[in-house]
Length: 74
Picture 1 (cartoon, one colour):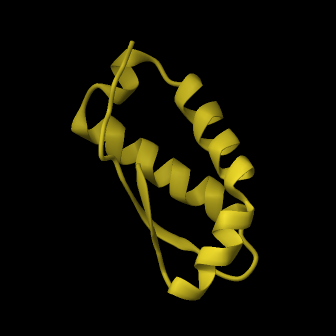
Picture 2: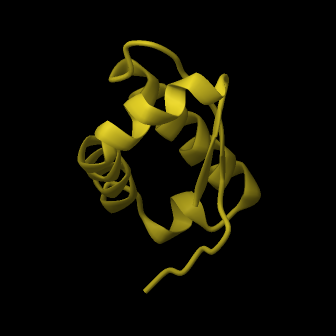
């Protein structure tokens, strides 16, 4: 997964919060059922939730978008 930033100056803050961002993403993913994330609409909703939850924890900027580069469900 890749995160698009609204400004490259946000990168250091995002890097310093790697553990927080990973935790947010893991918690969101683990709260979903296969049915919720198996459709394009479900993945779009998940992206929106990731953006919203990460941005709540950012101070100096925001992420603009999430790009799934790989999506494996077990």
